Amino acid sequence: MPTLISKEVFQQVQEKMDSNKRQPGAYKAKEVYLLSGLIVCGECLKNVGTPYSMMGNTKFSGRNKLKYVTYRCGNRDRTKECNNPELRREYIENYVISQLQEKIFNEEAIPLLAKQLNDYHNSKQSNVKGERERLAKSLEGIERQITNIVNAIASGTFNIACLVNLRNWSYRNYSLSRNCSKLRL
Image (cartoon, rainbow, N blue to C red; front, side, top):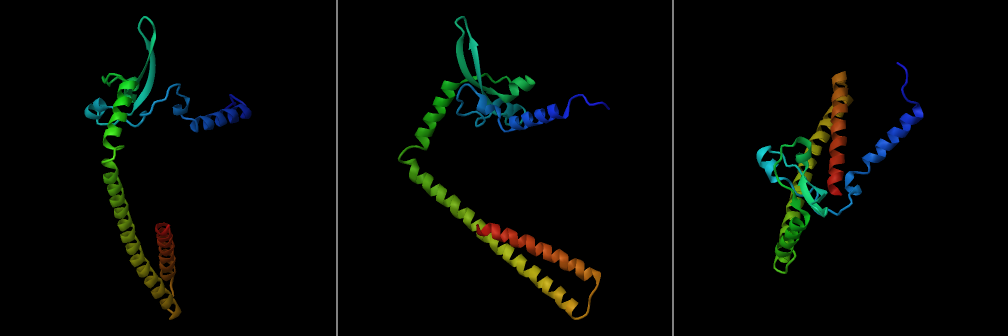
């Protein structure tokens, strides 16, 4: 088959595609959308069962071509199935900020949030401790198996199956040791 483009052009296109992967559309927006990708369309979630993200959109409308900055469902343009109207950016962002101030950034909520954060941290720590204990028991069992196989080989009972088992148990030992060291970090 004859080549349609030169290797240099192909390489330039590959480099451009790679650079586009590292530069998502979020960095090219002309407006700041605080909630883009954080809020989902309730209509699509209810009807389709999929949480499509609400994304920022800018349009000019009316006789004076006023600029309207809105959030709209990501499924709306793609499939035309969503009937959810666009939400004005000012309304939705002001509502979210007021709710954050009312429920999180006030003097009464801070001690409650600190307690919840500490409880979450303690539960994670206890999970890590239990996992460490489980891995330690597994390591003891594996080391016992390896010792038994080495003793069998030393006593003169050697066959290929022993060698295969020794290799398998050694690999499991290595794998569990790595997991234990990750938990210690």
